[in-house]
Amino acid sequence: MEKGYLLGIDIGTYESKGVITDLSGNVLCTQVHPHTLSIPRQGWAEHDPEKDWWGDFCFITRNLLKETGIDPKQIISVGCSAIGSDCLPVDKDCNQLRMAILYGVDTRNMNEITELEEKFGKDKIFERGGMELATQMVGPKILWVKKNEPEVYKKAYKFVTATTYLVARLTGEYVIDHMTGSFFMPMYDYKKGAWSEEMSEGIVEVDRLPELRWSDEIAGHVTRTAAEQTGLAEGTPVVVGAVDAVSESVSVGVVKPRQMMIMYGSTIIMLEVMDKYMTERTLWGQPYAFKGTYGMIGGMATSGALTRWFRDKISQDLVAAEQNGGPNAYGELVKEAESIPAGSEGLVVLPYFSGERTPLNDPRARGTYFGLTLAHTRAHLYKATLEGISFSVRHNLDVMKGVGAQLDEVIAVGGGTKNKVWLQAVSDICGVPQRIPAVITGASYGDAFIAGLGAGVFSSCNDIEKWVKYNGSIKPDPEKYDLYNKYYQIYLELYKRNKDLMHDLFNLSNH
Image 1 (cartoon, one colour):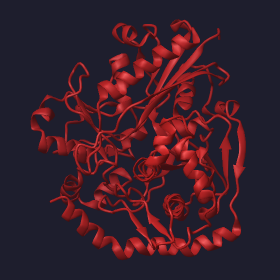
Image 2: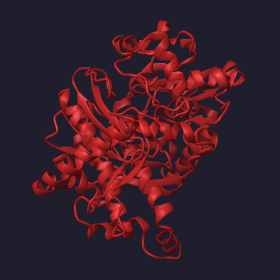
Image 3: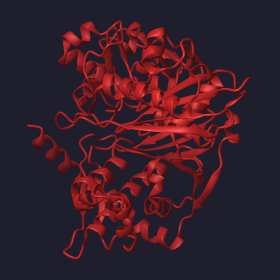
């Protein structure tokens, strides 16, 4: 094949990232563009799609082409990924009809979950979809729009996620990958790999949902209008794309059964590729990116978002110093935490600051700092925060092991891999080594590879092995593992004993 390049762009919770690579996986240029997460009221989380999704895409694409000087006609294919199970109603011209309701961090659909469980029955929902309803699921979000914003619901031509929206803006085609589609519970039938008319009744007609495809299939080609806005060449192929966690896992070579990734982002995602569907009520068993592959997945509600909260709310002096030319605030917090012993001298954190997704699936759970004394410092609080997130990782991995996951080694990826204290805490608490890729560009790098796979540049998803190199590993400390075991039991008991009180507080705060 003649010389060409691949473009990948990922839309995240707080920022978007794009990359251009050559066909050997060398990164020629990256671009990052921040955006805001809107919290209009407690339990809600929204993006502005025109500004945060399409605006970021156009800005990044134009700057990548400008910085590299690459002729747009040399871009062989484009791949997109995004945050995943969000809900956006659009009209026939793909104009947004409201702000996008984000993934499980937005918990406004709790009443709709109860309503659907009463209508269909929890067992039937699980039997058809392979998962239980949770705030992560799009079906209850659509039902929320139908009940609370009937005029928006009536005008909606399609209900889409961020990846579908980007591809539709680029090509005019409304498509969705099977993994993202499986989050449209209870409407996705995992055994048939299709929308279920029966389980969509009372929520939305299935023709108002995107067409189900595989991530590496060509969805369409860049239209003249999209070319004018993005700087891409008209006719450039665009693949269906994926949820960010899938593209992130592809980016580090996790494509074969029994390979596992931990993604350290605004939330932590744990994903193991499987060769068959594995279902567990407290986790997500789903199709993977490519036909014939599946995923066993756990996902937290807050992780990197919690470290961001800690930086912005508890460490404003460090933020101010950084803004005045001082050292990175995150880096300074890590330095402070390095001197704190395992267990943070009797401090345990429940990181449920936006409720919790798997394995609790409890949007009413609340964050907790337990064991505080006058001797504790900010460094203790930060170290305990990282440990609390790590306990939640272990909770997920323990459940995953119970249904056949292999945890001899995992591959770590995402912005959180820059935090060695955090990585070490996860390895020590979970008892697993973690390999660190040399390139941690993330989901956009995986998008570029998927784009090339769809365009025929590569013959198999296994060709990603030629792109991936590793830069060391984190190994668990057996003595710390034994100590953390005792703290882990307290961590588990804290939620069990305080669950009802958390729910009472949630109800009080929402009146």
